Amino acid sequence: MLSTVIMERFPEQGPALWKYNRVIYEEYTRNGGTGWLNYDREFRQKMEQAPEMAWDCREIELWVHTLARILNGYPRPVEQELLFRGFSKGFRSPAVTRGANNLRSAREAPGVVQEKLEKELQLGRVAGPFTQPPLPNFIVSSLGIVPKKDQGKYRMVHYLSYPKGSSVNDYLEEGTCSVCYASFDEAVDLVRAAGKGALMAKADIESAFRLLPVHLLGMQWAGQYFYDKCMPMGCAVSCSLFKTFACFLEWAQKNNPQGAHSTI
Image 1 (cartoon, helix red, strand yellow):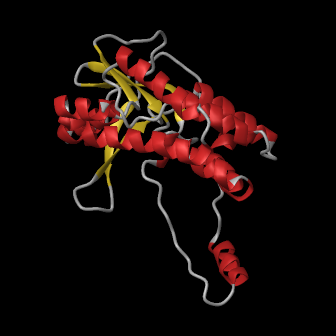
Image 2 (image 1 turned 180 degrees about the vertical axis):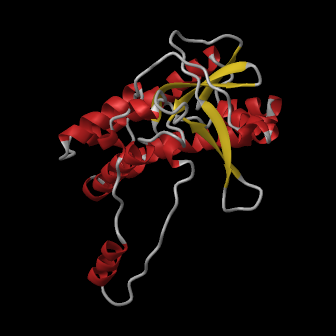
């Protein structure tokens, strides 16, 4: 009933509201209990205080609570602590006070950057705009865009390697940024182990790095300030942290498939 009333008054919110309803329904059918009811009540209270929130934006505190239960059995204690702390408080990098100019690619395509920023704001992954730096010791790192494989599509990059020698990336320990992915030979071994007639598939996660919350990273556009709340393309440790998260998801899916599937 409430959904119908909201969509009659705000029809543009229809798709996001139906997605939210699906999240609640899946939580109820898979796990039962009252967790879904508490989530719904708390989410609606937040919507009253911050009506700019999107209905299809997952509430991170509830997600972290569920994640913690699954992490309890994860046999890698260092990565267990890293994941819980990162999702609870944001994956961090050292702070220094500094401003920066945006890259030429962003200045030459302002419409693309504006569109990307508006989407990130709507999804709740970026905060702003602010007329003044919204936080003490506010770091501004450059924005840029790079073309995707699809014609006419672009990816916005928060360039954390500028200026050289004093950038956010320069303050990250080199060992935390290195990453080693599964090899082609490992994929062949899996197919051989599965036997004749096995099928292979590859899936891609949309905006994968943006699933990871990050300790606020500053940016500036059109004379206004913003800060990023999710791991950006352009942070040297993004690949390594996401692989850590992905390996945990693989383990959780194998060892706790029902709980992991519901959380994911």
